[in-house]
Length: 156
Image 1: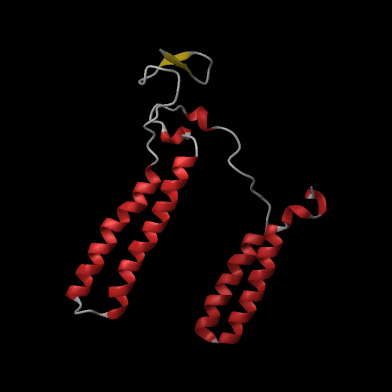
Image 2: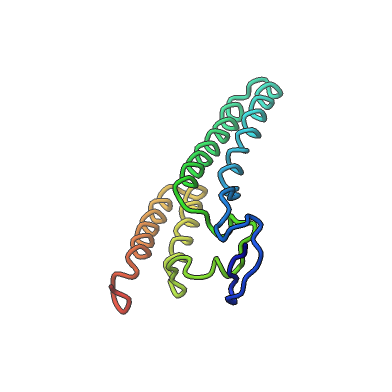
């Protein structure tokens, strides 16, 4: 059996059919779920080694729980979506071509949000009043970024 390649020709398929193999890699969930196997034992070792220091003893296993939740979500999501070209070890580069999303190359709003984040962190070091200025600027930047295509030349 064979598959079509990007030039209209054919190439051999390791699965013997023209369909994408069912054993797709989908490595993302297992990458995060593997974090449980790292952070939980490290948290226990840290608790024993530090004689129960409270911040690390609680924080490190909580990180294991967080990566477990992300891995569980990605595992559930990977079962609901079809196999992607990047999950197929036999895939061609051309199979992943096309639109990957809508991005605004001329947007200034991400710079506004970055400046707001810098002001917020500067406010924590200098004075809390500056934090409020950064949060207000961040809200303005976020609203501007979200509604960027809803006004002016790009309005739908």
